[in-house]
Length: 153
Image (cartoon, rainbow, N blue to C red):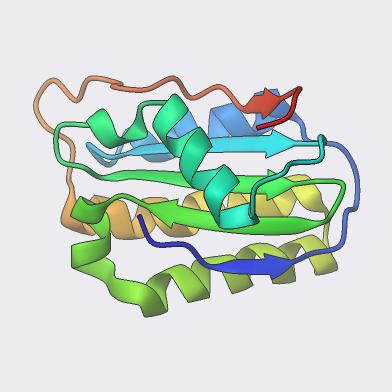
């Protein structure tokens, strides 16, 4: 898993339905999986450690092609990490993850939190569709629901 971290401005609450719909739409054009997870709780772990823990708890490493991507947000400390599994990282490299992170943050700053997350999902989806086109069946290996942490790690 390969993370890229940066702080962002909090501009509202996350609309789970809006984000889930964006994920579902993007995943029609790829066999890969995207998840969004946020927390409002303090953690004893670093941002990267917490994001990796969530990635594993969501079993994102179990996708057939190892092509899961997690957008992880710490809302109280206004931090974000984008983590891609090894299958996708080998295809896009570190510069791509940096660009996704920047796109999310810039959209949050110019619009709002939900627009930033949706934009990040769209940017990731575009690359995923190039490297991991949908299969004939294209099963949804992971839920599209936005998840959240309510406790300490």
